[in-house]
Image 1 (cartoon, one colour):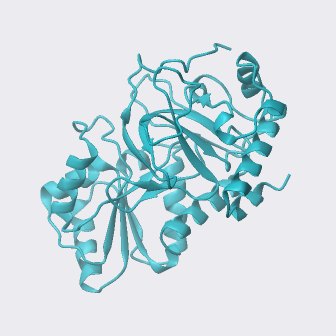
Image 2 (cartoon, rainbow, N blue to C red):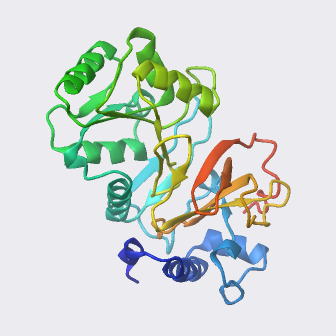
Image 3 (spheres, one colour):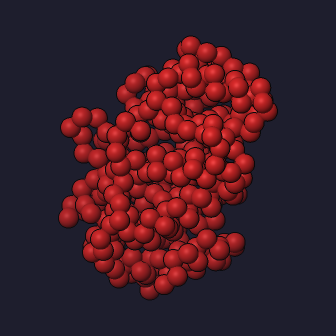
Length: 325
């Protein structure tokens, strides 16, 4: 099977073809996912549309080794978590598939990283091992091939000086940061940016009080002197990312699709823009599982774009815990 064919998808019909082909492959070669489908009495011969494919609850990445054919992973990505908590693990067989996915998605949403200076403020990620976000950003920084690109930990003074120097020189810059660190930076410095994209990756990581998106973006817009805050939507269990260029409206690359499920009936998929639990098809997840029911709440619009409006709490993921293997 040619895994890279997904990056040539241009039409809805092509996506449907590849999604149904991926479902058949998962059913035949992923024992955990096969057991899940069997419990639901779902067989490839009965599935005619991608929205009807069973979506594996994302919690399974914490409790099971999700991988096809008992293959050996080349790298294992793990989620962040509080001390003592169980983290998700993503067993990645083909790291080149991940690289192709994030490089292509970034280029489609923005431009070649070589045309940007990339500054990364991701302390909670860089302080631990196994972060897929750090792997991606490190690769983009290398591709930028600019001496000013790089990671920053807690040296906000050096970062502030760098941003202002790049602004003065009119350099196109991307500042990508975890939410709490961007807020920490703005407690000490203010900016008036004209050549810099500010992108938040979400999450307070227990460092600050959680804010709704509108409140967070309002603070960041004022502090950085920009009209819009960009966002990246990704997670350990995915190999693709969606991007928002403002107002929290995310668009996906052609090999990724988002649906919403009913909050009371996890097997019912909404056809309209009604809010619900976010289900994701990520065809780059060929060797783990491309069909994932997340714990995020959101709304999908007619053009396929979506917004994230919150998360289920641990007691409210109704209908998802259908099987204990």
